[in-house]
Image (cartoon, rainbow, N blue to C red; front, side, top):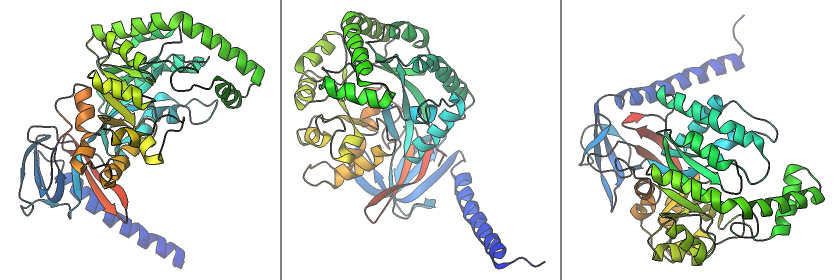
Length: 410
């Protein structure tokens, strides 16, 4: 029987899809060669936006030239450095897809990798939780399997992004120091942060609000939640300082940068400085961010905070920190795509007076510097050819293509 109209339409769509895939694969093949040129691009360098071309050779940027040189045309789209994300716990979305459901580490990481690259991130610090404020034994049990899966994936070159690890160390958990000792020697562990999610001090001041929210999230009674919170407060005061000191010592011994998480007061910042901590991550008040800048710490803030127009926890808005020059770098926190969105939105916000090169540096060059990665973060000769083609249409910012070390991965 002759195919009906729906079948014929399906075949026609299939043929069209094949032609599109052939066009895409042709471009992929062209940029998978040892040397090629991307032309007709608005190139965002460290200090300017220029209309030009970029020559890539053996995975690195070999030069920047005229826009009309022969090569692969980008139709005037932006070309920016691959984004460097210092903190994303987005991987947990795939490891714990639903409450009470645990997904296998390898496929969870593969799914996470796809989302990360689609957001323009070419270097991602997977922020793995070490320890937990409340009793969450599955987090402790999954740390080593996740690290093992990351190591296997990296060795097999299975990831499109460059996956490094940021250990987020919960100091209120007495198990944290031992867990850190077990995994910190892995060569891809490149950042450590110390955090204390005990309510009443840093991120969350309102203890009763914490009790109510925890009861809802964990599906326990308010009375049980309050008793568990009291236990947490007692435990944090008892073990927190010692665990914090052990974690910082372990990181410093290996030359790993340490970040202090959710500093609220000048005293928090001064404590971190005395411990040799160089980065204030997600300060919750302007006073803490200002103190961090004054004493020479880098300040890392959350991109979702800016995109949403404020903090989900009621803390200081990133826009306020930007207005006062108190931001060095942005991290995606829990939405990988927020970095690119935030960078272009910040540059569009004329009241802030931050140029596109300056805004892009906050999600590429500055995070790379904070993490001690000297081979990426800018589009300049000799740097890794980690690049993102960005198309802007009708006020929206889209990732059109991504290259890591010169090879197209999206």
